[in-house]
Length: 485
Image 1 (cartoon, rainbow, N blue to C red):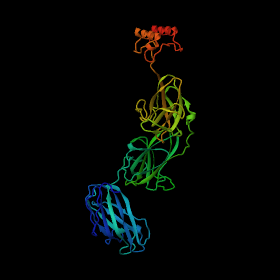
Image 2: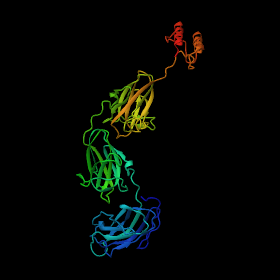
Image 3: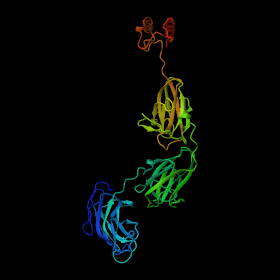
Image 4: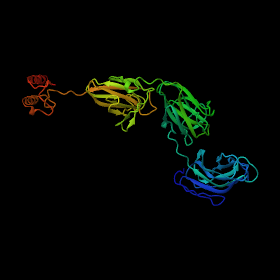
């Protein structure tokens, strides 16, 4: 895919030529012989002059090759690329085809340079040669060949340690071809790295490896923090695919997080596509007893009560009004019976992963409240992605609390705090509701007692709530009035 705006110029002459492009230039040649071994004076040379103004990170080849010598292999047709300052970057070998007859084609075969060349400006040298000389004269002819000089692709999102991507158990794919280097490995020379973070879902042994990678000689290392202590390092491991891949196996504490650096071997490092695998060597523990709502455990008021979602499954609950509709993952359940009529506050602040909280009136019932991210991560220390919420409760009523995570890969130990703050009690003697107990209240009650149509809004004269208005109510009000509030 071309990057930015570009123009392709076709050389009408055998020498070829190129012109200005916006961040990319190309040359096209026709009838170029693939002759002798590298460096032979009989080989054809092309010298495209590029305007530049951009770095070169990739070279892309397209074209068709026709056999002249029937014993020639297409894979022998190579192009040696030398930069204007004399640096020989690469020998381009676009074909894997062995013996062939007729014509073979290549369409957009990309070569990544070991390091980006600062500026394309100047005259380049392209030598067309045979990796194995099948005899004097042309062995094959490039009917047409287009060579594009392309800026390097942008670095991957996790190029820097501070942008490490969280991974769980399983396999993720990555690529270091466009990466830079911001880390080291104690076990060998390495460069071009990308970063991941892994949090152990439970205490046990876990293996991190690149054994399934088909690309390059990799180096793995683990760190406690960016720029911190290296925990482990491996260059070459015994993998079934290749002994040049890497494996680290170690014992993790429950909830322990490490940074995983994937790099290429060497001072001019290998790079490209890879697969990173994280597998559990120690089997996971069984799910917690309150993994399902039907097994919800009772919980009461208290600060920083310990819980764990280790090995919890996902109930599939979809929550509304949490910023966006989200699904709670790896969740467990509690029942809470309010000990007051008032505001119940629940939080997982102090937990070190991204939690989600929700409250329901029953299992499978109506959602009352939910929260995703509102803790500050400071008081108490923990994740700013932990959760807290409040809702109005009635004393003696039982509610269901779901505690889980936003990410499917996040689970483990946490803390939950619950409290109930009673509503401010009303003063029964303040019959007119003005916030003061005085003779205006007495007059208001007396007027209501004498005439039901003369009561303040929401009031009646049945002060003892026995269903009848009589002098027992009047005596009860007088007693409350004398006590005050």
